Every structure is written in C-alpha cells, then in structure tokens.
Image 1: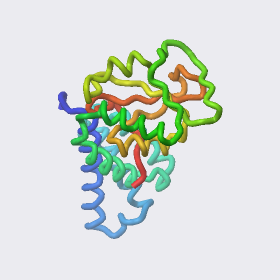
Image 2: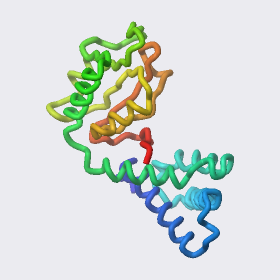
Image 3: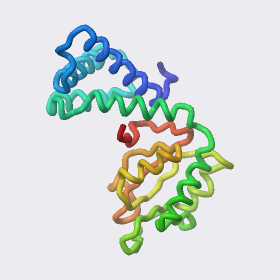
Image 4: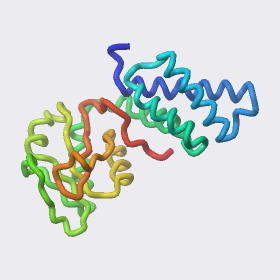
Amino acid sequence: MSDITYNQAVLEFANAGLKALSEASAKSSSVRTPAAESHFLCSWMVTALKQRTFSKLVADDLTLWVRQGRSMGAGAELKTLLEKIKAQYSYISDKQTGLGQCLKSMLAELESQDWIVITDEEVTKKLKLDSDGCNSLVISEEQFTQRIDGDEIIKPITLYVRADETKFAELAYRHNLLLSPGNKKSSLIKHHKAYQVWPKNLQPALTILQAL
C-alpha cells in the first residue's frame, strides 16, 4: 500500500463503506433509516480503524469521522459523505493532465465574471488588497510562471481567494481542479483564504467536496 495515492486510498475506503452498508441493509430492514445507517457506518469505521484495514493516508479522516458519528449520530451524514467522496474521486480519477490549462481557463472565466484576478505580482509577505468588495484571486507571479510548464501544473500552486467558498470550489471542479480546503491563517493576503491546486490533482488530504 506504500505506493497508493491519497485519492486512491479515500476512494477505496468510500467504496468499501458503501458496499458494506448496502450488504447490511439487504440483510436487515433495520439498517435503512438515516440514524441506523450512521450507526452502522460509525461502527464499521471503528473496526476498520482498529484493524488498520485501509491505508494510513486516511487514518486522520477516519478518526474524525468516527468522532463525528459518535457525537452527531445521523447528523454526521456519513453515508452522504461517502457518496460525495465516491462521486468526486471517481470523476477526477482520469483528470490528471492538462491542469495548467484548466487553471488558466478557470482564471479567464473568473475575469469574465468581473473578478479581480492578479498573477503578475510577487506575494512573499503579508499584503492587503483593496478589492472594493469584489471577488478576487491572486497567484504569486513566481508560482504562476514557474510552476506551470506548458499545459501542466508541475508543483503545488497557492491561490489567495476572497469569495464564497462553495461557489468557488464548484467552479474549480467544473474545470477539473481539486481544491484544498481554504486556510485563512496561512494566507498572506488579508481577508483572503489560501487554497492549493496540485499536480495531477494529487492532493495529500481531502478536497472540498461537492454537493451530490
């Protein structure tokens, strides 16, 4: 399992969980309500965690989901979570090339929607952008020019974004790009969150998930 990517590991986990739930509900009608499904999946995840059934790449996710399942019950929506992972990571599995062009295409669409898009300034220290309330995206010139080779992203690129996160993630996904969760603390631009896109969409952790 040492050569498995996070994308492969989390998809394998989601598929296994949904299969186990389907088999359990086929055997017993009692495992068909949201509360019962959540209880089953939480117990299944606890067993998987104890037995180290899956890659250690998803161990932290698994620990979090078990905690949420125990504290929130049906509100944790574990089945929906796995369905989102299955749908998104299945779709993106063959979207590993041409991502530099995908990024540029997304930036062009943002500009057409009157976003402020800046890719020709260095971002090496804390900055403040006066965007006058407009949505904005900034990529440091060094990263934009040196981390894209032809049509490909060759190193992780940080995007500083001020916008509705859900809508921005949806747009990125439509352009075949997986986004890391937004991080305000690590952002170098005030009022912006820092996101990353990775070569071949191989994020090291769970991406922002889309609605089904």
